[in-house]
Amino acid sequence: EDQVTQSPEALRLQEGESSSLNCSYTVSGLRGLFWYRQDPGKGPEFLFTLYSAGEEKEKERLKATLTKKESFLHITAPKPEDSATYLCAVKTDSWGKLQFGAGTQVVVTP
Amino acid sequence: DGGITQSPKYLFRKEGQNVTLSCEQNLNHDAMYWYRQDPGQGLRLIYYSQIVNDFQKGDIAEGYSVSREKKESFPLTVTSAQKNPTAFYLCASSGVRDRDDPETQYFGPGTRLLVL
Image (cartoon, rainbow over the protein chains, first blue to last red):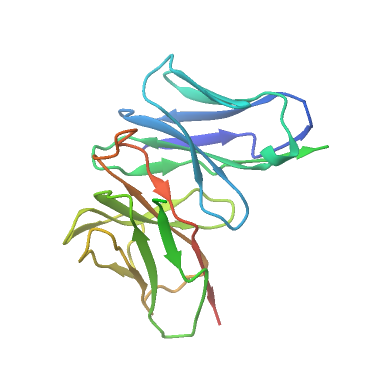
């Protein structure tokens, strides 16, 4: 059975304190790995799509990387506005089903 | 601006009542999806539709129904058979015509359903 596990469940950072979130997966065939950001009471906001091991993508203070078993979301010098829940999802079927992890809640304090 | 709209933002359901959640997109996407989000859990797929007049059950379809009469619209009905409907409901879409990334799903703002 396909599984997606995110760690840690929660992360508290000081402003400027860089850190990484982990998304490990066991799937039969990866067709894409997706990172989203979700603010309380809102829909997930798309961040990155990664398709193959070794791929990296960056956006402002965020950088996503992918290996054959896991993905990391690196947050460099975070600011309070980076506080959110970060969701990881994998796609294994051609028709589009996403398997989501439970998310990592990040709080950045000034 | 292209995007996905969901209404209402909050919805209250009485015992034995069916309620319908609206989802509209103007991204010209072919595929649309409904997910349910509960605290501490990942999003779970309820129904999906790849083209008009066709839809398939997801992992937790019991107690829900959908229709796809127009490309832009994918309403979800929560029936009285769904015994634990309180959750945050999210609609998403993706499209092979999306020149940036046909695999990526984009989400609406969500509808929170509460039971009276």
